[in-house]
Image (cartoon, rainbow, N blue to C red; front, side, top):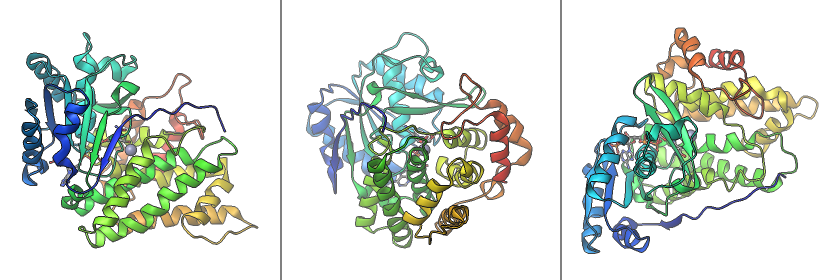
Length: 389
Ligand code: NZQ
Ligand code: ZN
């Protein structure tokens, strides 16, 4: 196991009707004027926004509002949010929605405290300060409620990039699984794929002797394999929703990833798909991950066989572990299919002729590669897109 530090100071409030405590927690964490940030309308339709406002009113906390965050959130609205916060002397950003709303809120929070262009942070400048952010989560997926990351798309050129900092960790996150019951089945499934992908990015590692985090990763995956079909079958299954919601947090606050090298190339490869076609991040991951696994499997066939046995219940073939590894990838693909996700370019609406463009736009590291498990060059990324056709 590698050396590590782990600091995850978010205060979680989990369970039924907890959104009614939003005002209390804003006050407790020092907010005196709030920007309520939300998406395209689901929080209006469900009545959640009204409940959050009532909770702030009850505590006497003033607020301004900014809605309209799109999935794959855009820089344009972040600039608007920064201006509004400055004009109104806002000191707390309350994100009410999914990963897109939370990420947009984080970008605003960092931008307000910075004199330059907030996009600098998404090109690598360290974030040194940010307004406090709280979240009320409405979809189990991105894990942004417990992470220090934000992913934003810049409209000029449609560049989708991430920034990370301890300053971006929400001070509190309210997780009420009831709020996820209004999700369309497809969004539930996309969220599930993202949660599982966050585990895979950590599971496939070259670090040795990481039994504890291997087992924690497997626990999250086994939970998803059991609970996701239950909510697809019955969207109102509170207990299954609750398990998935907490799994989404655990998958990405890095508890299951400390002390081990992590990969993250599939996320970079997917971000080009969602930037170009504006598809849901989780849908893109369902297409990319099986292709990536097939391409890099020979780096450590036994690790792929291990997950096949422990998570997918495959029989270990000791003479030919590659067969077991392949069977595991096949079962993952079938699982994605069974919950209504695309597993190839055509089903996603992506086009073969765009592959060179996506490869060219991809952000490769200093040595011209991405990922850690296998360091992928541009030609490898292209091969993975082609495997996903
Ligand atoms: O905009 P509204 O009307 O709210 O509709 C949303 C949106 O259309 C809808 N929705 C959310 N909660 C709902 C609901 N509809 C009905 N009932 C509810 N309870 O679902 C749609 C998707 O929402 P979005 O916020 O985009 O989903 P998600 O949480 O999957 O976030 C995706 C974004 O997060 C980024 C992705 O790249 C993508 O941009 N990620 C952020 C990460 C992070 N900050 O740590 C890590 C992830 O790997 C990911 O990259
Ligand atoms: Zn993700």
